[in-house]
Length: 145
Image (cartoon, rainbow, N blue to C red; front, side):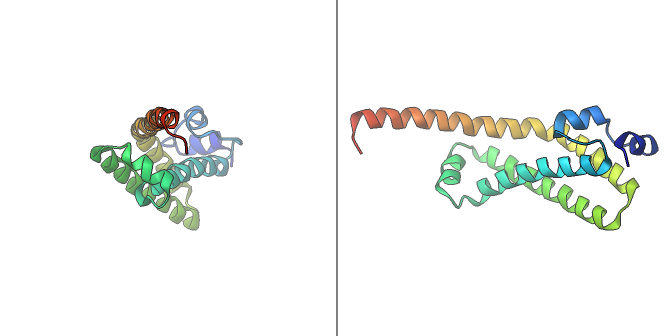
């Protein structure tokens, strides 16, 4: 079903322009929209999961760039994202259009708030790497590996 037809039937669902702007949708069906939303949410979940587990050198270092408050925000967002992804999984089994529309409305509310928290976390990690690079460059000019 085309998303605009779906939205006429379920006006709670976000506008297609908002979804396209935030989730890089390639098609115009409800399925395309949900797939694009899921892809972005899963990408953030994977990023945060690596930070939370810290099983690699990269994530160990990146965690050091975050304050305790930042880590709490990551944890909170991770939980909220898992709830949303699991709700969508259930809806995909039930095949209920009304629930899809309600879920997409929840996504809009979540994303409008969480997007800036996610950006803030990622910017702190980028800045951490830049500062670390400068420290390493100073050390490398004094010592040879």
